[in-house]
Length: 158
Ligand SMILES: [Zn+2]
Ligand SMILES: [Zn+2]
Image (cartoon, rainbow, N blue to C red):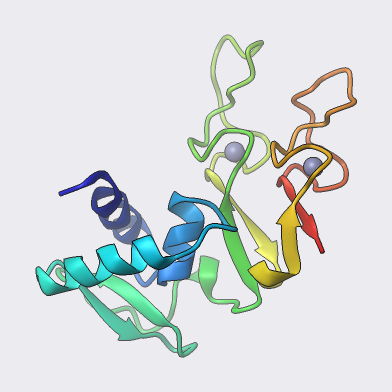
């Protein structure tokens, strides 16, 4: 299994019912095209490893075949007017990556979840040109401080 397929399976284990778009947001980023994920999901479906079925919100969700189908889309993605991006501070690891952080610890931006939910649709947003999508305050004394404009997400309203 390739790396992307593996990532898809891992995310579906944690969040059954993610759509191709939501998987793309988590694996490649919010503004990336979803075609690659869509292809992988179809391949996994052909192999009988996942099943693609409509969720209650009408969006096609992907489910691991051994899972019982949940009656509802996962809470995290149940709002159609929101999308999830990989946390730019911890790069989706959920760990505090600041160089000064000797002891390790949880990412303060995403509260260690590794991703951030943005209200609205992806089309309404673009990469923050001030912090260049890093989510870090480019002018601050502490460059790891969440950037005020994008609130540390690295994306802003168009
Ligand atoms: Zn984070
Ligand atoms: Zn920013």
